[in-house]
Length: 85
Image (cartoon, rainbow, N blue to C red):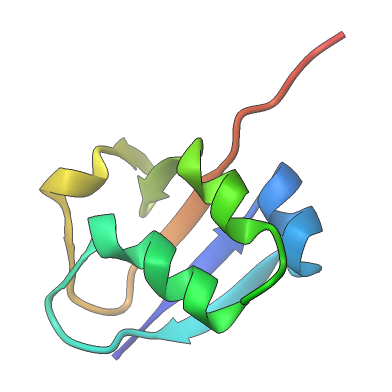
């Protein structure tokens, strides 16, 4: 099973993508483990640093990663902190 990942701001800049389809290594898959999985797919990109302070959205709803199990088919957005001027 796979999910669609949407990358915004620093996450997109780190890996050069705005979205991708990612296969989950097992089902159900804890959202709290997704950051490590994405970093393993994009090593040496600076993504780990961005994800450490990012928030997550699943199917357009802000969520707490510790409370979500992914089953496949979801749209997950990585929302890094942004600064304004």
